[in-house]
Length: 205
Image 1 (cartoon, rainbow, N blue to C red):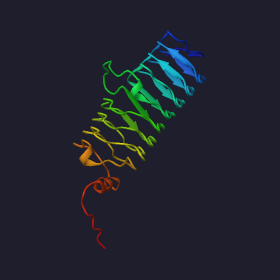
Image 2 (image 1 turned 90 degrees about the horizontal axis):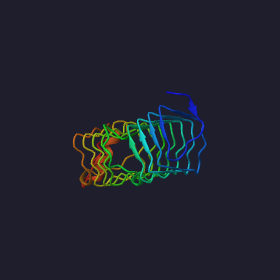
Image 3 (image 1 turned 45 degrees about the horizontal axis):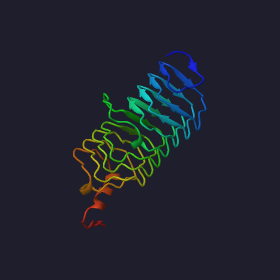
């Protein structure tokens, strides 16, 4: 990758660039494309990315809280050690084909996010804090939630076929209201699945 950039402009094309330490809070960036770019310790809090495209990009130690993604698309983009709080991912454009997962989150915080109704197969949300996130009606088959805190997150009519929730914790997933085929869970957290069934659990002394 080439040397770091200090600004990001609308209607621009960036490839193999490193953006480091930028503060672009509450900015508006329109119709720009980023290919194989890396963002390190940048702040985009409350910014608007309108009709932008991110391909094979990485955000490391960034703050993207409350960003708006109107019409923007993602392909093979990762968020690592970042704050991505309060983001409505349904605003983005998911119609473009993507090889593998379009986005992934590693050791990041994405509380109060919305993924309702999205088809995000193979999405990675690994070792994250995902409190009060809406996953209802979403296709999350073959996703990886391993090690993630899912407190107060919503799952209803969610496809979790072949998903990995090993080491995940604090989730409340009703088996009868979600698709759980070949889904991986680990004990003791998986016991919570039984609480959603119409059965009586007897604890032996």
